Length: 102
Image (cartoon, rainbow, N blue to C red; front, top):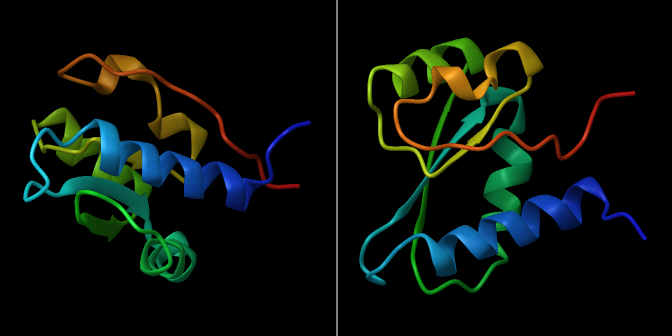
């Protein structure tokens, strides 16, 4: 059974907070489209994680350019597919489409 968008985002944030941060004091940095601010902050507030989650919200294009220039994001949630292509990444990255707007 496919995951709902909410389930996917919740599980992804939880996995990042547990698996990406080697030390519990080191935050997991999530770059996300500004249109997702409310939902992601609500989800994060309801998660129990080993590491704190720190968000950076802005336009997908702005965040993608910051990542291109070396910004340290462990997770990038874009509102625009065009800004999610792995060649934009300086470090190893993987593109996964979690949900699409209907």
